[in-house]
Image 1 (cartoon, rainbow, N blue to C red):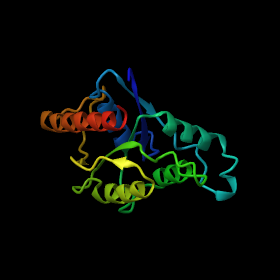
Image 2: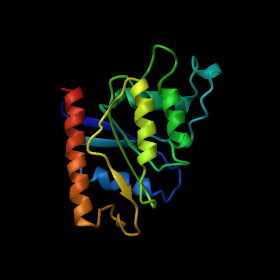
Image 3: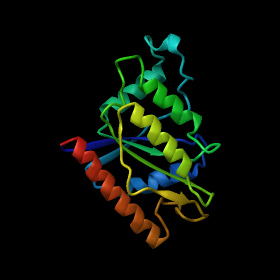
Image 4: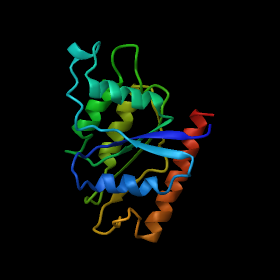
Length: 184
């Protein structure tokens, strides 16, 4: 395959999101033949089964971005010890209508950062459970539970701590191999 497309789902809608900064930093670590496409979640309406056979425009676009991607990357905070609503809503739209689940067979990576010492461990556990039910192939190791500290990602989206950068590069390398495994 000449180019691999990664659909990136950032779980925070904040303009100054730590996780968006992390996603931009990860984008700099992937090989040149891997391209990030950021999926807009802020304009996707709440899932409503009454609309699943006539998808609203943003939901239809989201499903198409999932379908077109060889890899899915979730970069997300933890909200109330679980998955942010924007991510769960995207999963719901992507899995419907019945028989048209866009998540099935997708190579998925999950990372996140938070000021909490636990990072995003519970969110990631919950997200893996949800995605397993949808037939997605989530990378399980290594895990990235990254505590966000001021200056971790600079204004050019570089990881400033060398040890953290090496760890994240190792995770990215493993994720790239994971995508290739499911997209020979």
